[in-house]
Length: 280
Image 1 (spheres, rainbow, N blue to C red):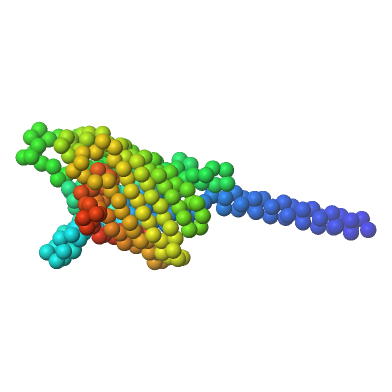
Image 2 (image 1 turned 180 degrees about the horizontal axis):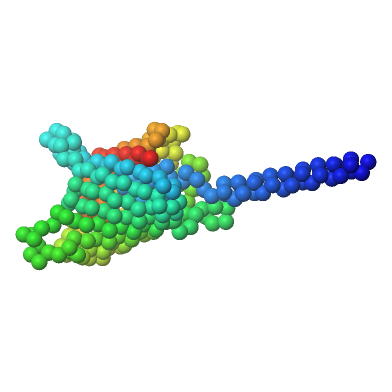
């Protein structure tokens, strides 16, 4: 009888321990799953950055094209004769920090970026908040055009705060305050310091398709340039996201896109392009 009592006690203790361990596992899963996921499927809305970051040790290879203006018609083969290209890589150092390096044919621009998560949307906080710091280097400038040109004059700094919310399974929205500083600028066309504010969103159409829209308003911008407005279509195909887009800014660098949009949508002056992200 004594042996039976001991056996029953051990059995009950084992069940209690197993239940407690299972509950801990469930609680842990609930905490992990409380974060909003898949707010954006691509690292960009269209050209602007989204709040998505690569996972730790993930590497993204980026290929982007912006063709010439479609307003040129057959003379420029609807922009296909005047393509600009961006090649780059993005690496997730941790789940909350990534570094990027890219080269743009327009203005022979090199771009270095840091993207870092500050807050994450969950049951207790309504927003994803991500910082994005960019350093652009314009190697197209030369001393014939700018006597006394130094390396510091080629540099442009951009600081952005990316603030998004996944509203529901289909709709995600984002706002983006931005600050741009140029060490060398033409006062007739641009400012040394430029503030921009805007954002965009993503609406999921099907499991693998979504429509994206973005717009940025530039404060105190010379009238020569327009505010950037872009629309895109995200297509998920296994290991990569393919983005087709139309935009009034041909530049793909942050500084050029935000402040040098020359196309006018109302006059049919806009550019076709695409982004391809391949993850490894």
